[in-house]
Amino acid sequence: MRRFVSGRLRSLVVHSLQNKQQICPQQQQHSSPFLSRFLSSTPILDFASSMADKSSSPVTVGNINPKVVKCEYAVRGEIVILAGKIQDELKANPDSHPFDEILYCNIGNPQSLGQQPITYFREVLALCDHPSILDKSETQGLFSADSIERAWEILDQIPGRATGAYSHSQGIKGLRDTIAAGIEARDGYPADPNDIFLTDGASPAVHMMMTLLIRSEKDGIFCPIPQYPLYSASIALHGGTLVPYYLDEASGWGLEISELKKQLEDAKSKGVCVRALVVINPGNPTGQVLAEDNQRAIVEFCKQEGLVLLADEVYQENIYVPDKEFHSFKKVARSMGYGDKDIPLVSFQSVSKGYYGECGKRGGYMEVTGFSAEVREQIYKMASVNLCSNISGQILASLVMSPPKVGDESYELYLSEKDGILSSLKRRAKTLEEALNSLEGVTCNRAEGAMYLFPCINLPQKAIKAAEAEKTAPDAFYCKRLLNATGIVVVPGSGFGQVPGTWHFRCTILPQEDKIPAVVNHLTEFHKKFMDEFRD
Image (cartoon, rainbow, N blue to C red; front, side, top):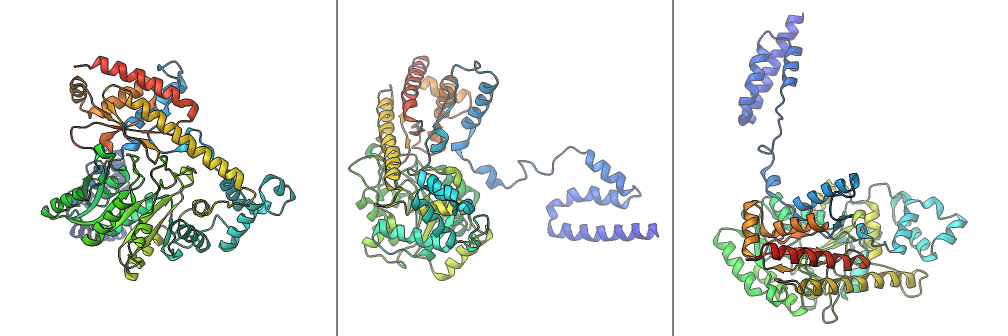
């Protein structure tokens, strides 16, 4: 009987493996040792033990998805990894480096650098997550009346009043209603809650649109250079082609339509079908705010060329100069007479930026207009695959688009906190801009908005050759030396893209205001020593 079962089992495995070889012939060479051993008289348990002894992994960098290997994300790349190691060394031995802390100026993560959350937002979140305290008398003394009222309103919109339950795949309908009303109040044009897809921050929304638009490497996505590496990484992961358009540093990182036309023709000559145009306004890493007439020209270009306009507008609250203001691309398009069906437009917003800085809560949305019902169904299907975004993030996205109003109990405190954060960011941006422009060989455009400065460094040839000897980009060489000398973490411009032969780094304006003088002093001292060491 045992012999019969063994023979029957062998025949089943042989049949299975033969089918597998037909389906996946490239794995045949890996299957044959297994097959020959199984057909021998060696007991199955002995074979399993011998396989377990083999140390080679079936997954290597050489056989994983090459798109994963190709994609890069400099904001959390090599220098940030090195900073983490140094931080561990400082914990183990505070005297191991010539500084006592790491200052992460590499990423827009405000609360990690000491920014406090908006009280009203956190009160509402707390009450929604623990609704049993809403009826307690002590709550009236701990929370503002409008926070309590808003929590009740939100909970009434959630099935079962449970923030731990799944929601509709686009997000809770009542919260989308609130967001749509906020968009309408901002722009002066109607917004449909059915156009809103709530997401875990803006990044998943960007990935969703890349999944939708990119069919092969022959599909291109227009991206600004410099750009936020989310876009280059997402395009690489989805197998598309990044079609660059260079922002003009000499004119304050201006976007020229002539540059778009030139790059479009170049892409077409290479057989690339450009599907969409990414515009980041206010700019990341460049900090510029587009003028409305420039936006009109961009909308018209997309209309004429049949491009989807992907508008990254996550820094819409971060404007620091009196001569610029934020206009959403949807508002601009509607003001030009283009309706919902005239131009495909996707706007991204996030709770991670602005004055709120709730990065860890992972809240955001995209507003999708100008797509057919059939395509909308496909977008909804992609959202459904992820079930829904997290509920705390959904609630925050609705609060951001509908904060306290005049007359509400929380309004004065809310306004004080908001204005305090934005005015401080404005001062920090100015201080760092002036400091950078005072350094030898460094020029820095003003920060009109967002959370970053992107100075250009004219590096000496000796420094460039030293970087080449270390097989690293010159700006990465500079940033690594800056980290090792001062503990300040910035991101090399090569991680964002730049005009060939130029070198930059991105620095956030987020260290708390009382730390900015130390950042300036350390950076100034380091830069002087660096330039002296590598002076030609």
